[in-house]
Image (cartoon, rainbow, N blue to C red; front, side, top):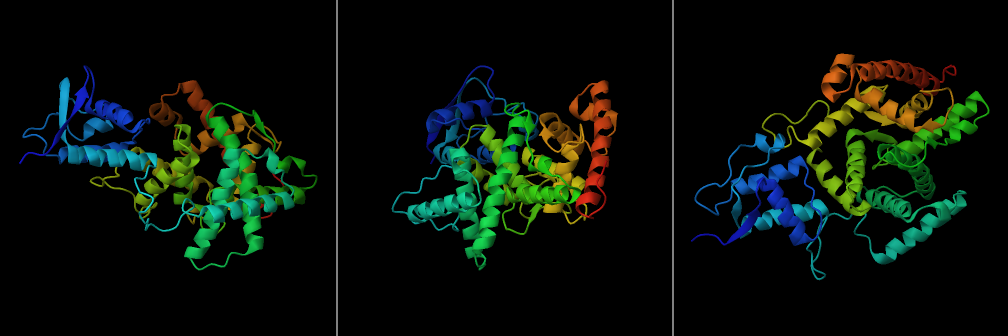
Length: 398
């Protein structure tokens, strides 16, 4: 017996992925944006579908990776209702949509999204008390940032409960305050990426009046920076925590809410939980060659540049050295300009690459490639000097 069939409308010049995307947007009333890994899952469903006796598309798996789409004839593409439902479910997962009914019991592990309304209200009041007692004006905190702070608070409490860790009020307060302060710099970096917002980040480190004060303030800045990404409270950022942060920001830039972006990012990071610098996706692996895999490798390389003790994670002191190297890239001041933030990012991304390799990889002009090599050398020198100053308590770098 033939399966129930639905038709996907194909317009002239369309690839199948474009037609599917349009149909999903219409059905879910949202803009569905699959990444490469998710598109591979979609086409795995299609390849295993038995809606028709003959496959209606030509091309192989490399088509989607080369942005060629799957070539189909204009008209209707037939797909079984069962296969289409699988694709719809993939889209819902990508968007963070759940079909759970009110009477259904959700059996997944507790997360920041599953706290009761009563507990959430208690958490919000406690957060406001913590911040106010620490001299932070909560009226200056945006609604979006307050939601993130609340999520951080709940994540800490739930993580501790799941791992039988007693939640110490003093430690909890320190982490929440550091996270709140770290958000200010994270928002600055986000605005730099979007080419919007402040031209300069006013760092507390600029207020230092002595060498010892400067070192202490940078160490504190490093703690704040790490706390915005630290999930388990060990005071370090590993590749998976940084991966989660960057993916969440990426999805937010595409218009997803903070909650939906984090949920989607958690799903992707979970796929990479068994991968690390010594064990990367290999050819034949479903994740091999995907945009997510490339981003994960890039993060590993970035950590490698900043990781002085080579334990494949960043301590707060290593983060502090990075921030100091960035702040003094254009001058010896301790505020961070948009230019310094951008240059530091490029210096790390092109580490050990020759000017010609930069041209080949990014398509830059020879003049710009040479400029990158020049400020990268300054950044690396700054980083070494900052590490000696902050981590090894050496002399103030000049």
